[in-house]
Length: 194
Image (cartoon, rainbow, N blue to C red):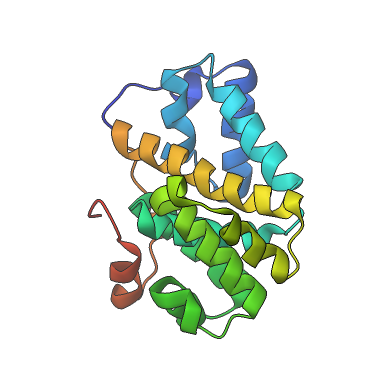
């Protein structure tokens, strides 16, 4: 990391709670968490926003992770690509399927609704300024509500914000998230080299 952050041994209050959550989940404090502590007045807000938005995401955790993987590829964010690829392997149960989705979700065997969701997420990540009513109508046509459309947009835009901050301050993915397969690792290294 390029900047100084609060060390786990020095963390107190809400930052100590954030760190404890990472230790419970992973056994260590992620750089993606600690990098926010350079802004200790903001770090708990970022954590709360993530937890609240993810826990009330009506499309489910799998959809959150799929959107994040596709957004990470376009940003490009090696950190988020590796982290969410590992989580998706657990969700989907197959390295091959996660790799197929990351390469081209349109031909990876996903249903029409998931393809539409990911196409919109990709569009938001690349250039949201080009969004038209027709983009929204396509999502409605496959059954998404306006709240769900807003959630897809939020998830993709949120990933842009998070990932760009991670890269800007030098946060890097921990080896825990690196897949043992060199080809899979290479595919998920979409931005900064590991």
